[in-house]
Image (cartoon, rainbow, N blue to C red; front, side):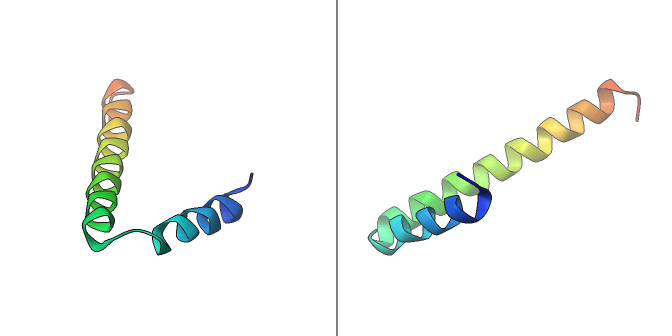
Length: 49
């Protein structure tokens, strides 16, 4: 499955969620984004930047 197909599938799932669950998904996505950013920063530190 390519990125576009995954995004379409995610949007279909989101359409069926309650407001409460949408907020939970938003919080989880924020966590993943922060974690990915932290990982990238740690990788730069590892290479001496």
